[in-house]
Image 1 (cartoon, helix red, strand yellow):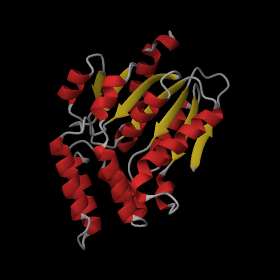
Image 2 (image 1 turned 90 degrees about the vertical axis):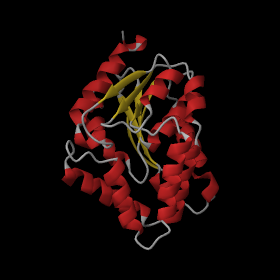
Image 3 (image 1 turned 180 degrees about the horizontal axis):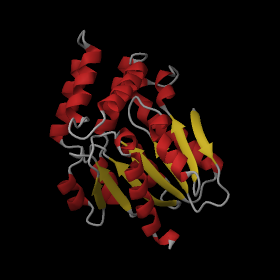
Image 4 (image 1 turned 90 degrees about the horizontal axis):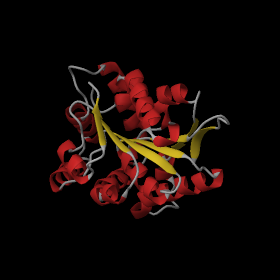
Length: 255
């Protein structure tokens, strides 16, 4: 599994950036460049694992979790903050639960959670639409309807993101579809109830998550939003950086 690993001997923690479906660590480029000054960085690229035919299609998400877990253990990381965007937020929750003793906090960026029956229905319908002849147009339409804010986002940037996603998806469409389905089925509500670490949910406008339900499940979760669509890292990179940094500096370990 490819990765970006930048070891900063003076850092207080390692930030682990977890990208979304059909994306790569490149989506966190602005964050990596900003935070590398004061933190160590690990950004695994697990999209390539989707094309590894030795991995059962039914185990794609769990294998991604296993590979990243193994890498964290190999590096002997002892002070970790997980930062996950979209599907990466699901991965962040699972890793935080697994590495609870060394996890300072977890930051979830516009992940669809908790997964309701209605949300599962929306994603099932989306995945079913990908069996049609116009699959790429279905993906473009889904992103434009649910992840793009025409009043706030830079359409050119979003088009570049869509191109990257389509390029990756078109190589292994059925396997990427299965990965998304596994992420949608993950019980994020149960994971949130178990975790006893500082959590921040950072949504777009409108957020993909159910903010009211998140606050019911986790009364101490910090909720923030930024004025842009789903791809916050690309649309408002500096605002995102400052929001993350403010949250990090509020943690007991940094005081």
